[in-house]
Image (cartoon, rainbow, N blue to C red; front, top):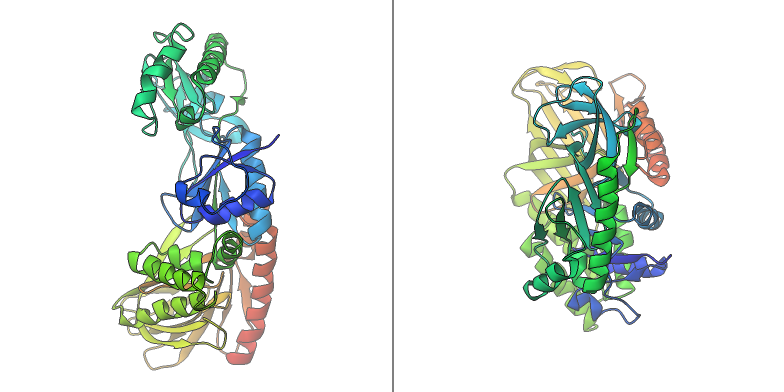
Length: 474
């Protein structure tokens, strides 16, 4: 079955190229993107929507229905970018599930996933069975799915909820189409028993198709509401497949190549655009206008990235934006910028950061006491798979070195960001380097949070860091 894919956001052109490469059919294209593509497209309701995450321009959100469509498209993206992390929803948004209460409006769900219950007049007693629908998914380590009492079935054009009543419309439904949609479901859905939500896909289907899907979902929802919940937790009906792919610097370079197959694109296009600033975006647009006119080549993007990074020295407070594959976001700092310089490679930037500690504590990984007046020196190279932290005492003696293994840092005008890879390497003066937190890397790989390519690269970089520490810090 051919999957229909809709693309939105800063990666739209690259994702369109990827979709075409993997045999998917594009649908509901923007006017700008349609002008860049000379192959057949359609305007049918999409099976999969790919767009930039609302939380981070480094992430691609995948929303797929049916479930298998989302899985297929995610697999194609990861096959292309190779080095990436991915967080997948545990149950699927709008999945109908049977759960067993464990007390306090909490329940044991399918696969041992604990869920929070809502939509009940009071919390069910321990051991009581409940049939509900996943209305909020867990895509962060500190979240659990939310299940609402009742049945909610999703389709390409509508969503039907029971118990419920009336209708509502997606904000993307055209005003002139709404009366026609209401008339189409008249007599086919009992709106005193069910609520019908017209999805954006209704814009792309005929009223008869919308009414047929609404009636089908209403009949199935009626059956599921009347049915007793199962003895054990289970997924009764799959909803939407949801996942978030985090694109590190190397993956963004792949996206640049894909975009270039459809439209003139400079190097580092997505890296610079992902900072989200108007100035950065304007610089990229200007560089690409020059490529279109034949004034220069894609390497203009490397110069643009280097220019933006040079502005880091003007920032008073600089942070390392440390993001883990399970989407924990940690700001490390603030640092003072001691210097920004060009590296040996094209577009390569070296940054020297410093900070003076003002409180007692312990240096992570080293197990050594930190005292007020101690100094930290951090070395960042935009082409290296690590960041080096050196720690010195008040008197200037080296306390130890901590090498954080991560994807090549992206250096912006105010911050530096990277995807942390869990494993680190530490060394104290006169001692052998030690690899730490390898178990966290292994766990992330087993759980599917990182691709095999990224897993192998992290192990290799840890080994290289051991050799580097032996040579540079005897």
